[in-house]
Image 1 (cartoon, rainbow, N blue to C red):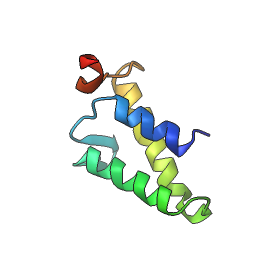
Image 2 (image 1 turned 90 degrees about the vertical axis):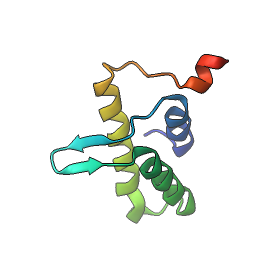
Image 3 (image 1 turned 180 degrees about the vertical axis):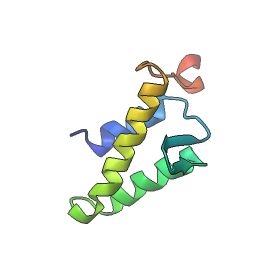
Image 4 (image 1 turned 135 degrees about the horizontal axis):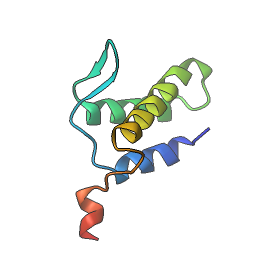
Amino acid sequence: MESINDLEKWFQQIELPKSLQLYQGVFIPDLSFTVENIIGTLRANPGKRCYLPYYEHLVEIKEKINRNNGKKNTISAKQKAV
């Protein structure tokens, strides 16, 4: 299980698509906003099992992005400049 810190770092290092069709029936129109809110919710509720679906949703988003990118991460413009 990845830590919230690891997931947050991963999401900061990639260029997120504006939207994402996670799976049939689940479309995320503002992916950046959604990821930020899920991470914020998890940070505000550490260790509370009732928030596990938020964590699982974040992992699903990461896995879908990896599948869409052929398992290669898209480096953000910030990292390209470094």
